[in-house]
Structures are given as structure tokens and as C-alpha cells.
Length: 257
Image (cartoon, rainbow, N blue to C red; front, side):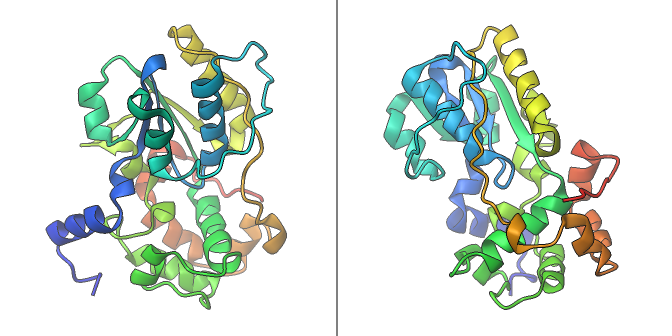
């Protein structure tokens, strides 16, 4: 059914089923700073650093990463409940209208690796399939090939947020929203560059990133090996995430691991 839904109907379903997708920007009002989040792209690590900023203030040691474990930090309602009017989870469109002059940033991930990570995290490692995946034709028993083939035909209006195009999450009417963009593949250097740029614009001094990524590498072969073992899958990912590659990974490089 979801393959036959018109554009307007799909957008209505997106709002009803995935209101979190409409609110992709975490705005930290006291610091005039915003993070446009991308699931499966160092999202949890960045949120820890931002939570520390809101609760303890700026860091004095740029290497600081001793963040306490914070329950429910990845739930969208967390920011409103934790900080009230001091923080807002909002849409890209509202952010551009209401918060001009705020510095915004994001971190993206190579689509080849992001698809693999989503498969092993959501299909292999978890006991239950997320509701959005169940509703759009995914199953716990599907192979990686079947997963990629399903992902290739489910559009961004309906797909689970972890597989939504990063260009869709980060853009508003064709405009890329974040001022600063880093990449998971070069995260150490890029996070340093992002922190430096934020401070240079009069923003806060942020800490380093703790390693909070879900580890699925022990469950799977290297990314490049997965695609090499099944010719044609890479082309499906390239076509499905064409805009992501053009914006963030124009070399279309295949990650090794």
C-alpha cells in the first residue's frame, strides 16, 4: 500500500507516524547554538556533549569527555522535559525563521556505511523490529540484499528515520540548514574543526566526543566486503541516496570497515 500513496497522503502519514522527523533541530537557546541531528551519525555522542553544556557549562579542557550516562537522551521529548524553555526541538523551517544568527552544525555518515549500520542494529541486533520498519515492508528475517532492495523503493516520506536521506533531514526548501558539517569517517578532526568554528563565532567551548556508538562491527563483515560479495547492491544505494552522495560524499568512496 505504501508504494501507492500519493505525495500529499505520504506527507500526512509522515506527520502522524513520525512527528520526530519533522523536528530534527535541537536548539540550545542560551548558547545560540543548534544541532541538526542525523541518526546513525555520532548522534548519541554529540547529544552527550550538548547535555553537558546545558547542565555544567563550557569546558576548560578541550579533551574533556567524562560525561555521565543520561537515560532517554535520544528521545526527542527529553530536551523539552529536561530544559523547558531553554531548549527546543524544532523543524528546519521554524529554526530558520525563528533563530536567525544561531550557529548550527551537523555530522553526516557515508550512506554505504549508514545502511549497513542500520541493518545490523535494527534487523540483526534487536529483538523487535521498529514500528516504522514493520509498516514499510521490512522483516526480522530478511537478508542484507532484501534490506537494501526494500530501502531502495521506500521513499523518505515513509521510511524509518534511521534510513531517511540525510539531505532530506538537513535541508529546507532546497537549502542546507547547518552552517558546519562534519563526517563520521573523519570525526576526530572534523569535531575539532566544528568546535573551533563555534567558538570563533562567539559560541561556547564544547568538550570532546565520548565513544557511545552502538557497536555492531563484531556482528558483521567489513562494509566494503558486504557490498563486494553481492554485486549490484552498491548501485542501489548510490541511486537511493544520490543527493547525499552529491552533497556530502561526491567521491562516492566505499568505506573499508
